[in-house]
Image (cartoon, rainbow, N blue to C red; front, side):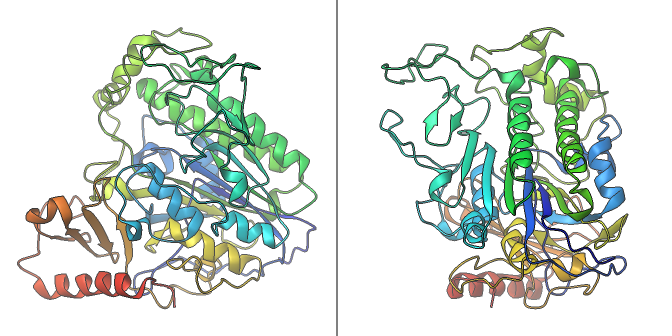
Length: 490
């Protein structure tokens, strides 16, 4: 099937699509050629676990729109976020650089004005780009001194977003260089002890955040359907607060948390339906993924915050505090068979769902056990448009396109993916597909390294580091070389 459309859409849903050297496998070939100007859309879910999607085994949650992507594209079983935490994971996706290289603690990763990103790379190639949704990569510090700098300084032409999450203390959207709903002539201030900031006329409404973001994404697609575009769409669901819109409450068999995932699925469907309506679906490269694994336990840190809801029906003011535990009690396992979750170096923290669709090019209903990571999105996009990467950009990014197209079963030049394992900057996971080495250092150095054979022990219950020292040595050497060289891409 040989398409030559004027504009090609690459829909990358919450996502990473890339493969390692000696451990990748795709089911069958799909013949295709790339075009020079495919559109790129990234939809990047927030804290969505491997087991939260029905095509990855969820039985209490229904995700028909995500599932139809899997039925029409390639589903990966061994995909990993760049980190087990939100901000560094997003940094890795947009820069193509492993965030562990920065040795920075917590969620305070920032992109600097002028820094090379996937957006700036595509912008230079003639793309119009938008960052719509959760940003979590920093703005200028003084929000009363305009312009507020952020996404527009790293390659995006349009921005409408949430600074950190829909539960953050800003209670505001930012559009391009300013707050949405700022009171004219009044300074914006977050005041301790007050429910809402001063100087903000229209605080965000928690149960309407993702519907608002989806509307903005749809409008961007409609405005730019006839030219190359890059949409980085990052909804907040199902991150806490677990506050699905009223029409989704009670829709799942996993309580309020399941309802939130099903709302996310509906918004994915809206994006896909928009592409259908614009006549872009057959020429759209679709990827679905998450920034990290889910948190199995409820987060109590913001339970004292007054929620700003459009509708408080369904006992949401009580149920949102126990949404994760309620889902577990109902039989839902948020991270599937994997150990622990967000913030940990174990698989539950960084193994995420990943689905890629490109009709007529990626074989419908295919699967891959290729070990992939989100940093590879940059190189894949570059190959997709026939471009070359600068030597000093995307240093940990490998193109997965040959695997997606069924031309190769593996990607040369990579033996493992390296993942920032926690927010303390004290663990890196070295994953080869079968073997998994957790390197402990810094504040956790006294815990020693851990080695797991995931082929025989997917739950990471038996540490083999003492029994298989040769494997530990080999994987430790890969990490040391990657840090010494400052890159893994040749």
